[in-house]
Structure formats: C-alpha cells, structure tokens
Picture 1 (cartoon, rainbow, N blue to C red):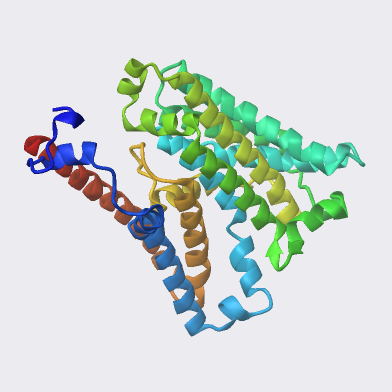
Picture 2 (cartoon, rainbow, N blue to C red; picture 1 turned 30 degrees about the horizontal axis):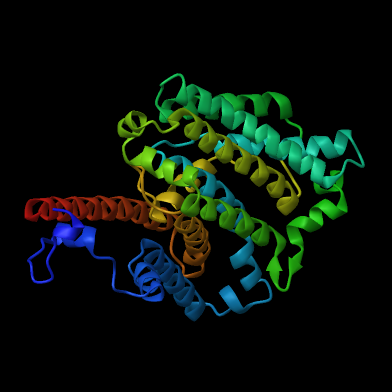
Length: 357
C-alpha cells in the first residue's frame, strides 16, 4: 500500500504506521527519551551510586585534596584504550594486543628522550601514535585479509609484541630523571581543576564518538558488526573498515603508552600487563555488545570510569581483594546477560510487527 492510498479513516497496521507517520515528538523530547532509555545512563547512575557510597563511608574519597583529581585522572589512560577497543568490538571483533602495544610505546617514549635529548614532545607522541597504528595495521591485515578470527590473531600478537618488549627493554628501566620536566608536567598538570590527561581523553572520546554517530564510515562499522555477511553482500568496504578499526585501536594504545610514561615517570617491562582485559571489560560493561553492532564509545568511557572507581572504592570500604574482582566479574556477566535479553526482546517485537503488517 502506498502513502497516497491511505485514507484518513482507514486502519493501518503498527508496522505500516511506523513507515508512513513520522514521530510526533519534538526533537528535544526525542533526544530526552533516547537519553533516559539508554544503557549509558544506567551505567552512569551505577557510577554515581558507587561514588556516593564510597564518599559517605570515607569523605576523603572525593573531597580530599587529591580525591577529585584522582577520580578524573586515574581512568584517563583506560578510557583511551576502551574507546579504541569499543570501536573494534562494534565490528564484532576484539583486540587483545593493546596492553602490549601500550608497553612498547611507553618504552619507546623513554628511549627517545634518553637517546635524543631535546627531541620535541610532539614528535615523541607522534612517533608513539605511528608505532601503535602500525602494530594495529598488522592485526587488521591478518583479520581482514587472512580471515582468521580476531581473538586468535590478537592473542598471538599480544605475546609477540610483549616478547619484543621484553627483548628490547630487558632489565632496563626508564626513570623520571631520564625524562624532560615539561613532559612529566603533562601527566600532572591541570587546567581549571581538570587534569590534562583527562582533557586529552575527553577530546579523543568526543572525536571518535562524533564520527561513529554522524559519519557514513561510522555507521558502516555498526552495519558490519550487526551482520558481516550482509555487509559484504550490500557492497560495504568491510576490509577497509576493519583495517581502520584496528589501526585506530593501535594508535590510541600508542597514545596511551606515551601518556602512561608522562603520568608515572617510570617504565619497566611489565607495563600494561592485563590492561587489555580491563579495556574489554570497560567496553562491555559500558553497553557495547560483545557480538557487535551496538553500543557507544561514551558507554565504554563510563565503563572505564566505573571499573577504576570500583577498584579504588572497595578497598576504602574494607572489602577484600577477592570480592573486588568478583564485583567486576559480576558486572561483566550482568552486562552480557542484559545485552542478550534486550536483543531477544527487540527481535520478538520486530517479529510481532511483521506478523501484524
């Protein structure tokens, strides 16, 4: 039935009504409704609840001289990794090598400053971005063109990159005294009470989030994650988008490595061990479906804040380390179960709509 055939007094099925009638809500009401129903808001409210509970038990958790600063600063590096990881997971893949990439670029940062005194800070950060992007490109090529599951590829490169790091660094250690004072200030400086590292993380988050939401390439990443085979049949540049996702993940891991060195001032061969799992956990807890095709990097960032805040809050509440890990595991399982429940409910609604049409 065409739009011109519909009479004012005719009965229209629910499925047809969705096609012929635009929403009667104003743009503001639609935006508000979307926010109130979003997974991101739920995760944010959990984060607020954790902060309120921890602060009520220990006032210095948030209101001490370093409490607010640490709340913003500590998750910044994980936010960068979670954003890159989130983009990869949206395509129905995963990047387990980001911790090793971060370790390599963190050590590269120190070596460049030690071996080339006077090298501009911007040049060092650019070198870390390029190295991270190159390592991400290796992952992307093997996944997109080798047709090997990303879990297998990135698990392998996790060990390969870590082995390179161990061979290169050995027992060597980069110390704060080896680094320029201006570079170290990048890890401690604040602007209007907001740490510089947090500002950098938010700028990256905003840029990636805006691209995913508005650009054609961003929407194609979601389409690929929703149904890779259908994306190929539709003619989407699947290989190119997968390459871009892994390159972005590697580049952000490279940036995280440089900022890690600025933040802590010391680099050893153990840098970044296990942080790749935290990045995956942050993305999943933040609402990005582990099976791809849905979620936002905003949620991944909130998930990163929630993970770091929980790890910081639970010890102040006197909770043992085992239960701290159990809480994080429960959050991951809960996020996956919720995602499957919502996906099943949405599929049922679509099937009912088609039956009524």
